[in-house]
Image 1 (tube, rainbow, N blue to C red):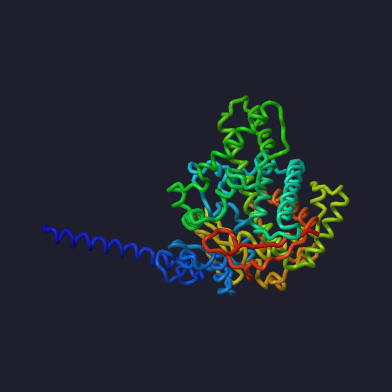
Image 2 (cartoon, helix red, strand yellow; image 1 turned 180 degrees about the horizontal axis):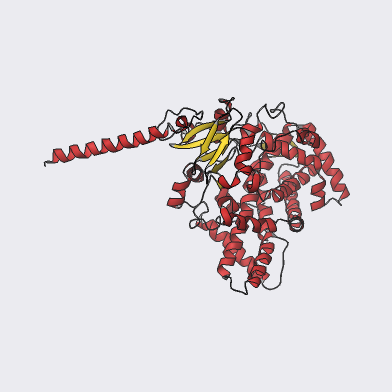
Length: 514
């Protein structure tokens, strides 16, 4: 057989292979029509409905909002995510079914990690399931009791003082009149400082710009960049592939940094020193477990477990809390009447508590709760929730659509779209904290408002997150006035290829003394 014949066979094989792949994906495109589930047509083979995100023309939140609003009469809609079927559930009752009623069938979160590549994230309940999830969640829950949160409020108080001192120093550099700040960076300093002190038992030096501090390490782990965004997209759209190729979300330098902190703190605590921090609570828990096991637990395993759970504290307490604070500052800067009312409450409550940020003082700030809840509705940090079906389950929507969901199917809950739907909220574009007062809250569907998720997997760190958010707002409003800087682009536009809502150009706030 001459070379031309071999070449012809090779070309024919390539053509057959490409045709086979094309046919496979085109057959996949019929998945929802075969099941009589309404779907949004995809004109891009292999990519499905995700073309505008991949080409960075739109954000994840904007894309899913288009899907949601373009199908107003449907309870659920079929999509295609890189050739794989994905179901968008729009009916709050279906959301309840997925998150709570049929939890056992949808207990796996959409984003997955490889435990070998990311040991520090391997104990986080967000990335575990089944019995492992129950075990890891109980460790965090037992160390987030009211009594232990009270102890950790001492650290929040200390960081609040650092926060005010930092802002005053910045004001002095500007003749004491006002200072214009990048709100996300400002609040990242605060939340990383709280995580360092309340979580790891160390001073993170987060209000300085010295290299290698706690803030810098947290940024390397979480904040959006070209490469981290690519990894987030990989984990979101190709969870199985991500687990195979072992993509690491925690850079080796950051992994070593946090492990060393935990190791050093535990060494100091061996000599009898104690702290009012999460590391101390975890250490006490594992010491008790070791005693019950008659000393048969491996020390290295214990240290890794403590470091991994401390990393969970970082995951829950750093980025999402700082972005939430940024959005709250944005809203109260835009609504001075809300800011004035909130400041009045803060001053009244602090006067009752010797002007100290204490656990009880924070709990007394009831109007602040309403402001925070409304801000998390108008500009949520997380635009969608995603689950993976683990057991066959039947969903029936308000429009009569029935779907037998097969294991492996991705379910997407459009958190942001539900929060802005006129069916569930009167004047949803209006910032109105009173919609969350006791009278109005009772009329809301529980599974329309999901800033912390819902069902058994609801965020275990939400109480600690709210503790530091309220502490930061209290000292900020007790001392300063907030105005929106002209540098802030309005309306807010979301950065593409980022899993959370990050405004393009950032949010800039002008802070002036009272």
